[in-house]
Image (cartoon, rainbow, N blue to C red; front, side, top):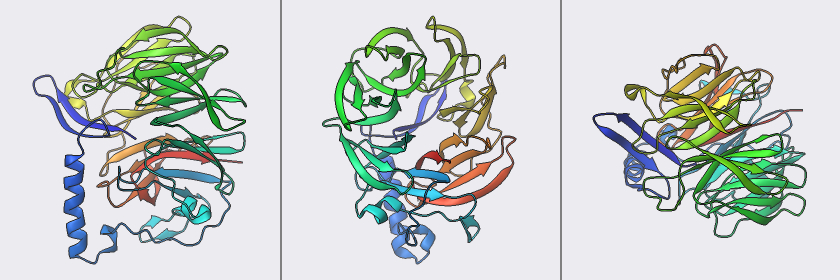
Amino acid sequence: MIRTEMKYTASEGQKGTTSSKLFSHVRRLAIIAGILATTLACNDPEDALVENYKPPSGNYTNGVFVLNEGNFDWGVGTLSFFSPEKSPWIDGHRETESKIFRQINDSELGNVSQSMTIYKGKGYIVINNSERVIVTDPGTIKWTGTIEVPGGSPRYLLPINTKKAYLTELYVDCVWIVDLENEKISGKIPVSGWTEGLILFENYALVTKKRTTKDKREGGEVLLKIDTRTDEVVDSVALPKGPSSIVMDQRRKAWVLCDGGLQDQPNLVRLNPFTMKVEKTFPFPNEAVIAPGNLRSNETADTLYFLNGGVCRHPIDAPELNPNAYIPQREKFYAMDIEPGTGLIYVGDALDYLRRGIAYRFRPNGHPVDSFRVGVIPTGFTFNQP
């Protein structure tokens, strides 16, 4: 994941750090160096990189996968599995099956683990810095194939049908077309700039396209409308700075969270996907901005959730945006998703980006359920349900 961390005020502009290939790693490396020094100076296992794990069960048909980034460039991504019914309590948290991909396949996922999608009995794990998508059997997590993305930095995969998927891209000016049957890149849709979040809408894919202050490529901050029958961009609409995650509500309105990049004010935008017109923009108050991201909706699609420090929510009928968290942040909330069926909110806490992270589960009203240990920098939750 590429994560922009900032606090913005009208008078002071941008404050904070950025963790990505595009920007400097100096601050994160300094933090890591300090923690490593502390680790070497003490024997507390909580400060160590080592995960204690047992042999994998090889049965992952009812639970949630947690994809962990690992540290950029020098770390590797890992995959954890949490079973609400079976995961035991250890030292105040529930424990997951850790590093299951490596244990089962005797191979690392690569660097950096970006996203995971389950579709038609296959699991697709996008590894952006390793330029590939790993294909697995989600029931056993056995490695069954690889989709190579030469020269690319893939982000998120969206299955269009049983034969084809789209794959967004950070550096190459395109949206990749993936042949799911033969597990290979079969083409690309020319697009200038960084493509990120995407959803299906009838015969179209809605794709967010963004830039950073250091990205000199042409093209602005827009939402693209791609005809999935022809693989062509047929429409677009300009958006505020930093369009990233996108969801659809119960009234078939598209919502895009625009994070503001490094300097601009973030906004939550509601659009009509038929006309590709912006209907309403909800700006974040300047004093309340803490790196918003991870836009999600509940199962009935009448309430939106996002991270802005802690967990925030926005009913689709609300006249104004409330950017204040109703679930307070612990150390560093980094990922969030909502479990189908139960509506439970899963939040990944990256802590200091070095130690094993912690995932928390909350009820929709914000009441805590439990927590469980995951890997280094938990970046996403993928639910595998019967």
